[in-house]
Amino acid sequence: MARKNYTDEFRRRAVELYESAPGATLKGIAVDLGISRGALKEWVGNLGSGMITVGASTVSTAGRPESQSARIVRLEAENVALTAEARKLATERDILRQAAKYFGRGDELVNRFQFVEDHKDAYGVKRLCEVIEVARSSFYAWLAAAPGRSARVAADEVLAERIRVVQDPEQGGDRAYGAPRVTADLNEGAAPEERVNRKRVARVMREHQLAGIRLRRRVTTTIPDQSGRRFPDLVQRDFTAAEPNQRYVGDITYLPIGDGSNLYLATVIDLCSRKLAGWQIADHMRVGLVEDALHVAAHDRGSLAGAVFHSDHGSVYTSKAYVTLCKELKVTQSMGGIGSSADNSLAESFNATLKRELLEGRPTFPDQGTAYRAVFRWANRYNTRRRHSAIGNISPNAYEAALSASLTEAA
Image (cartoon, rainbow, N blue to C red; front, side):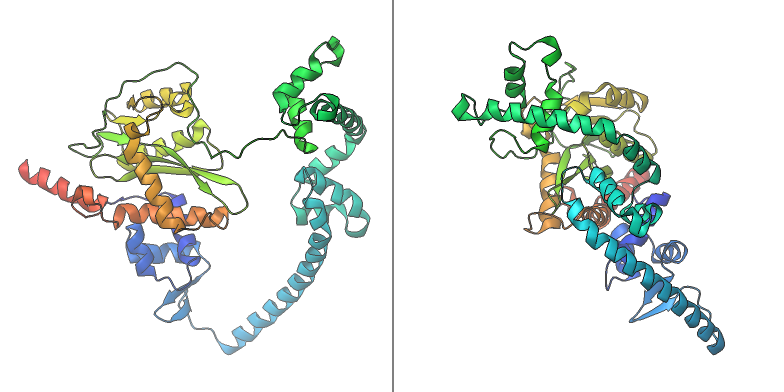
């Protein structure tokens, strides 16, 4: 059934979605999100830019006429502000144009600090830090640590040369060696004070582009469980439930971004109505991602007490923190067989559908903001409007409303 209360985050996202969609109408967005047009209009007026689309015209939400003299005063003030802003933007453009060559090297943050150091006489530290978005205190801390950093850089250069020898076939090395084997070679027969840490070797290899030859791998979203915790399969590939809020499935999938990075989406799906009761997006796959998704489901449902949550054996779902959260929410965990995607096929199918419908054959989303907005709109429309063959070709919210009505009549 439709949600009756909305979080501040939901309101802001709804306003952002409306304002970022050219040609969108209040009614169209409201229907997709399962809210009233009046509520969305109120949110736009309170949280948005102050302008809304009515028919073919854009009008102020204040609704009051402006006198000619007031308009002249306002425009003159705006002109002064725009002139000052233009000068500021011109300076910032010059700064960023000069900074571009710094940002393409290795550690971006360190190179930002170096850029400030190299140009502080021309623009001043404060202005430079504001434009390239670094804290002045961090810059000064970096500056104070310069002597020690120089010594470490020199030591890393020496280590990089040793790594090149280990990887050089002409000197008995192997170009395919990665950090573990390189570390073993370097430490073999070395005195205790000459031994090196594997993490340091990996960092130096990365910074000096000395990575071993390897094949390109697919993005893995299920990290094998190492805790030894096991949960019975309470679903047994029967992805149905008699009533809402009884049995759920969930999974993590990746959302590819044009710059080569990924976002990750965690889901909680009701097996009765197919409703996406909870979801969360993050740029990581730590346990907090799946915890947040389950918290959203608990908020949406009011309580998950007595419900079953079914997933794969990924380490986030078997982690101590997630097991504790399930106990706190009185949720019973269920897991399919290790390495069997069919045991969680409904969640897998949901992920495939989402990507197919949002990417439409494109390999990636343009950027993270676009990806988040697309999923936000699609996820809400999935519950409010998208028809599902498994529940009679109606939306999950409509199915739950009809089911609730029938149960009330039966009582």
